Image (cartoon, rainbow, N blue to C red):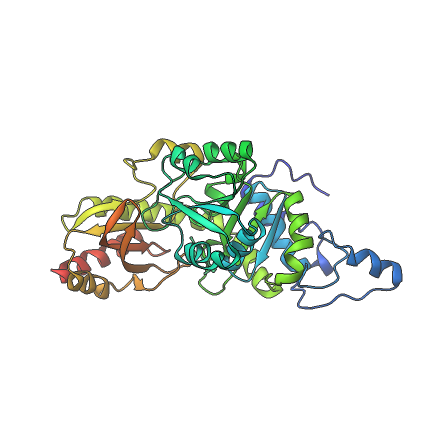
Length: 388
Ligand SMILES: *Cc1c(COP(=O)(O)O)cnc(C)c1O
């Protein structure tokens, strides 16, 4: 068995968890089976004391194809374990549920993914769980929002509309000193550009529907954490919530992981080129992009992230609804649609509002895919002309 401890992410993504070639197949087969059968009583009894890994007994609990992808994602995130879920929201809501009880309190970043906020703010009160929202840029604001009954701090850094960062190390060490659990939605960065567990964050979450799926053809989610937390999860939530990913989707994730580093670099360069062009345009009031040289949280970014990815947004100077509509409808390469992380560029027009941004403003979010940056810029240029 090769020693994988010194492997870099590019090598891990190819080989980790695949040291054995089943019948010589260079890619692992899809174990498209629900159950696993046993030779005898002892083997069966061992398997039902599930700890992850062989012997497998039922695919709701674990499956070799899923584990091949989980082992790689955990290694890329620098966590001991990873579990794949049927969606990003399944990973998020399950992790949150696992870390609250009646009477508990959650501190959450205000501009996090919409349905995440909906779950914490509107759904959890059913179970007598309350919450407080923070802008999140100043760690002291997060500390001040915590109460004796706070059990969870939920982060999303950067957020995915105006790309705000939270100080992972400061929040991680504060939370540990108070016995509060921390979770982060790390989807923007992918496991390649930010590893929050290194800064003391307990749960690192991804929607696999974005970069980990990578081709706009699947819905999935991932939860990365320590062996200890995964063991508790395996005994507590996993058997009863039953929302883990099936083997075929996991195999698609596995396929994408192999080339993710090449793709992320390409879209990073493209997004940086598009952002720089937008900054020169008279039609644009403000550009939000993690990769900008003058990003307001540049120091923090450089400390905790090793790059920026394909999403950016801008505030059009002309805030009339009709103008924003004309501009987005005129775009040809950027198709109107939610989500991101695939091969194709997308545009989302939205009226943004946040705690420290009370007045609604039109923001146009662009996901920059694998098209040539000059073609994308030409597309924006002609769309701007049509908006006038
Ligand atoms: C899309 C998205 C999610 C939800 O993921 P699904 O797989 O669609 O459930 C969560 N967080 C962020 C930041 C997202 O962009």
